[in-house]
Image 1 (cartoon, rainbow, N blue to C red):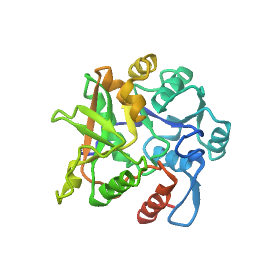
Image 2: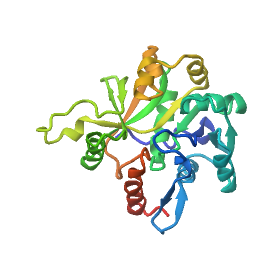
Image 3: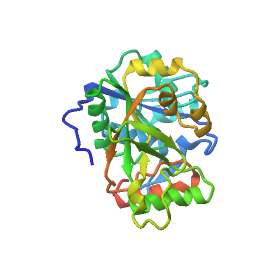
Image 4: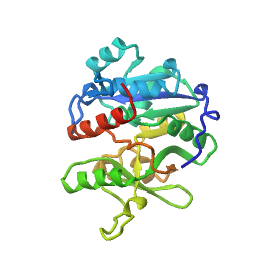
Length: 276
């Protein structure tokens, strides 16, 4: 696992934007979906994502970017900052770019913490920020977590049952991203006993500089981006460098809330980690 860089990435070096929209095709109203924690208390997905963010950066360095008044009112009710963005934003990266148009130059590095990834460890964000700060060639850094047997089983089960689950990433020896997919890549023969070790889950976290966000927003959606429904492919198809920060299997499975069927698995991790 990449060494944690919590001391290297100070909160003044970056700001966190959590893009959230109500009209998800796979799970409408997903940001307001309730997740039960270890104490039995239910909190919304967006609140749990915000709580994960403020464990990494000060609350005044975290914004929820949305186009929905229901989400905005909910976030403001629990004390979060909101920036309203246009409904026309096609994905979270465009929404982060739109948020910067409102907020201005709030930090040299912007972290996009997806609103459906409340299990993201704090050290992952710190490592992404440190890796981008040290890499002038990359427009973006993002994590690839080597699958544990249970996480791999979750991914292949989703795929076998026709559900669009987590995203996987393949990258070269230089850690330059080669491809991202909502299928499990690379293909692993069933006879391979340790097949899970060859698959990396892509967590929905990105670090980029403001200039890269502006450049992204100015580009038209790419063909593969539209096929896969993965925003980062716009950068890859334009020839830009995305650097993957690899991690060994984490102590818990960082399952994202992509489908209603993911709720029990996420709640199980909240219980395992003692998160109320």
